[in-house]
Image (cartoon, rainbow, N blue to C red):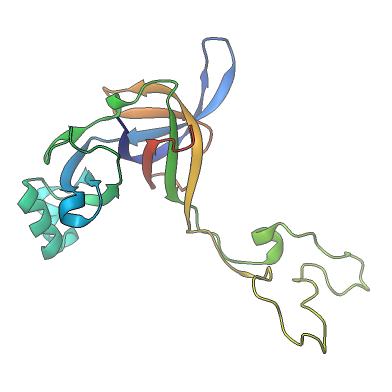
Length: 213
């Protein structure tokens, strides 16, 4: 059965493996998540599971949750949460609305895909954004960190699309595939995932079974 959960990135540390190797790991607070809705092929045209994460305190519900969202949670009999995401799974029959999912469904050695929003770097130049090389740094060059040649003059008399240029860098949906789970701590709702995952600390993450494993 396919597994999926929502989580929050807490930071990075390192872990010793049984064979003595030292590997970098990302600590993820995974769950608990509650099933808010089951979408079926007959009713919605596809099978999916809607999960919520990070419950909102009662005294903050009116401030943080809109009326349509509150009605959606009330219909499911679930307390309002900050995050609501869908996962398309092959088989959603074992799940029920109101059921709580935890990180205990994963095990060390599992391969997962982790999706998050990358860190924002603002408006950056081509060297930082696209890893281009700089020009000569001599005084006579007068062209050090520029974008480079923009194209011919008379033909085609334009800049081709997809030319690497300055612009907004980061804040994109990024998925890192085939990351190994090193350890699971169900008591503290923690997953230790080998390597780095997208996003800043406290960023929302979607963890699911690897699709290419």
